[in-house]
Image (cartoon, rainbow, N blue to C red; front, top):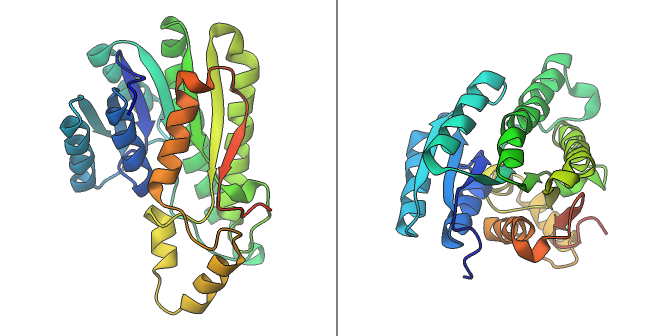
Length: 255
């Protein structure tokens, strides 16, 4: 793979998840040092560190509560102090989503997903923007969902927060472009990784899963590497004139 990121560090929030870990590995293969957050699974974080180091790059992993802005800032500052310039920022995190009809979602569940997901994304932006500006610019990516363009049944607790995050990143693109900062989103569809894998592999819903697969124009689910490839492209200089966009990687789900 062509080396795009040889100096400084790429920061990934949620780097130990199914999609986040593929993003970290792809960044390392493209030459980036990687600093990433994880929630509680240190074993998964250690595996990501090993994959980054196997590619000949350096890694920093920290357990961070994304709802705590001070904790997020400490993590970002530590990454910048260790590696230098922050050139790439990826938000690939998100809470466990209750798959419920709207009329069954409680106010507490609604508040929880917005607190964790939307505020977590904002805290990452707040902590990294000063470093991106100080370094002469850079690129941000939010991993959202293809459901922001196609209202999902029983998945509004995922789609609504991600729609807010999409608008946040479009706002960054509008306001910060003059500082050499780009911001885009990648919108996965049904991906056989992380929370998507848990859903697809859930016992008792095989007929429903097969129906979803047959509904897709490409007749198959995506994998984590599909998302990582899209993220890497948008972070790289190959997309240097692309900003404020959302790239659906969904096998045609939005059609």
